[in-house]
Amino acid sequence: MLLQIEELTKVYRTGTRANDGINLAIDEGEVFGLLGHNGAGKTTLVNQVVGLLRPTSGSIRIDGRDMVADPSLARRLCSFQAQSQVPIDGLTPRQAIDLLGQLRGASKSEVKVRRTRLMEALDLEEWIDVDASRLSGGVKRLVAFAMAAVVPGRVVMLDEPTNDVDPVRRRLLWRQVRTLADHGAAVLLVTHNVIEAERSVDRLAILDEGRVIAEGTPAGLKGRLGAALRLELVMDPDATDVPTSPFGLSAVPVGNRVMVGVPTDAAGQAVAWAESLERAGLVEEFTLGPATLEDVYVALVGGADAGSAEGREVFDATAA
Image 1 (tube, one colour):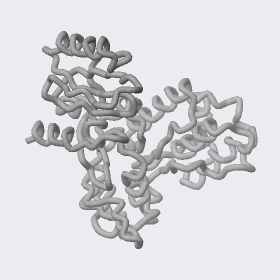
Image 2 (cartoon, rainbow, N blue to C red):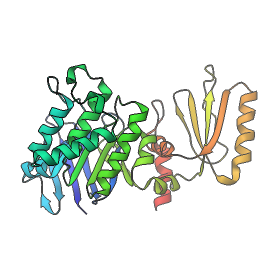
Image 3 (cartoon, rainbow, N blue to C red):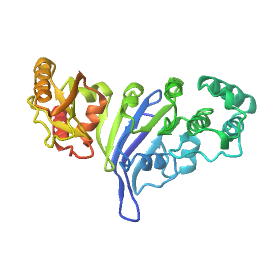
Image 4 (cartoon, rainbow, N blue to C red):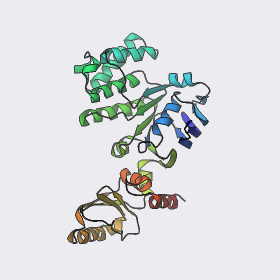
């Protein structure tokens, strides 16, 4: 594996344990997703890999070389797009991208070719010579991606790269993420957008409270959910109780919605049950469709008003 993380732990001086014994292995040519809610430990993990934070314990290796012992090497081997906006006001996209490309060791001519290709692929040509202070947040985000991708390292770290990006250019960006992997980089993608991650990653890990609580391919994780279908109930605002699932699987509330796993052979029973709840005035509407990675995430992490113990029991039992 190109990137190997073993028993990585980060404890801040305040006593906060941001990462707790994390083990991950990511190969070249792979887009690996790191999912989790705000505060789950994703950005702390990325900052340690790229050499901006020193772990409390554990190891990080790229191509077998120790990044903890040599954080400057980590910064040379990794390209990094941070979660926050890059402070490039006073520069144009052309200047910012060219500067980063040359700092990473490419010649002016090499950078020009790569920058031109990226600007065309991301549909950014009209802003190439506009001062960054006049750019929208989404365009700045795409420029920051181009700065990380113009001369990519062996490992490319992208922390919430689609924040503020419009839907059309978001699709263009995802194509470029895949292109980075196709050209041999290991791409570590940090996101809380579960739906986009399902379409874009080869494998993923879900973090909660600094620990990896599930890891695998999107299809493999959905298979461990224990249900091939998902029934989504939109509850009446006056309803106070979460309906008890008749399928032996947990019903997980997320806001005014309730997600219920449904076995394939129980589709008709699920519709009849939902219709009975609708007639009783408990449910405003419902939909039945294939299970998604979002269902896995909700089952494991839980919604704002729901625990995730039952969902984790399903995963533990399936993996055993």
